[in-house]
Image (cartoon, rainbow, N blue to C red):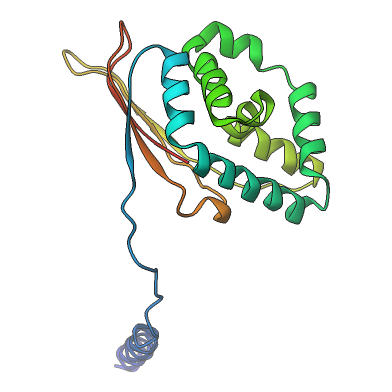
Length: 192
């Protein structure tokens, strides 16, 4: 009986605590925003040209926010850090070998958006750039998650990854609807 009273008392305290927590005011998330959908077609370079032309103003605004965020968080010049990252890493050979269409897409975005190739390239290397900055600042930070489901029978392979984006990216999301091209499947890609 003595133990039963303790369990009831513990259950009562847990109930009171849970109820008091549930009485907290709800966090206001904000007004929902419609994410623009951009249809892209053709080879990588053509898709990049279309993307950069359609989103030229938004890309320029986003890159300003990106560089300001870099400077705020690192207390260093953003262009210098981007330049150092670009020259101290060697991802280009692998990108050209394994994903040449994406490399060409980056070139197309740079050309039609008015941004430098280096800036567009480094912005697209978000995960790698974050790791680079984490090493400079001697910190460990968690970023994205990924998952995959292997093909089975007539069902294709599925892959997905989230992007734990920085706050400056809020509101810059766009859904890219990439039409099938040659041996590349139709794709829907959430981007910023």
